[in-house]
Image 1 (cartoon, rainbow, N blue to C red):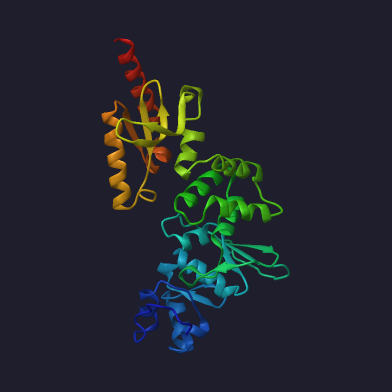
Image 2 (image 1 turned 90 degrees about the vertical axis):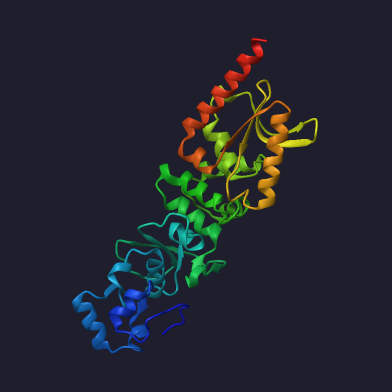
Length: 310
């Protein structure tokens, strides 16, 4: 059997072994510990299933992304997993797709089932092996996830992957420059250009160009340095007339205790200097953009109304 860390129930029956281990196995893997009769019997009784020719798993694990990825590369050992399934292998917090995308060398003849898509390509420069699964490098996986996704979903795929830090926007831009044909290239180049303008996080890019992009927010300034009585402070977004500062943060970019302490100290200094401070995280900007807009507009209007009544 090929080496797989953490296997259990090696002394149990074949059905018990398959149920205990969320992996895909070749016939050779299984028949080195159990007989071919045991495997055939497990298939007949439904305790095992053939997920791809020559590749098996427990039926309960059929839709697991690790099992899908392992099975695809065991079935086509010269291929690499790419796209959304590879991204999930690199970072399990990213969405797991229902289909596997494989890239393989030109000339390979494969007849995949409906849940596997095979894309023939030239030689691959490099690859990774998250969780032991042969995958394209993260930036190539993200570029492929973009091009294979429906047009309406591409930006969401991009935002989630960049926010997870599976790769950087610069790595993705270099990968895009090497690719001759990419669906949606113009839109991807546009989004990557927003990063080139000086944004520090994917959250800032999305907030600036999607959430707070209309004329109601034309007075907002981005990445502003302020001279406070006690210090110089940087704020992500500023409405200067209303003295409203907006901070964009999240656990991935403010994850250390020191960073959180610095954020609290900066906010305290801003409030002491007369600024109102609003804080939005990734889930706010991506999941309730209308609420974020309303909070900013209401706060700005209240501050301007109060200053105008003096």
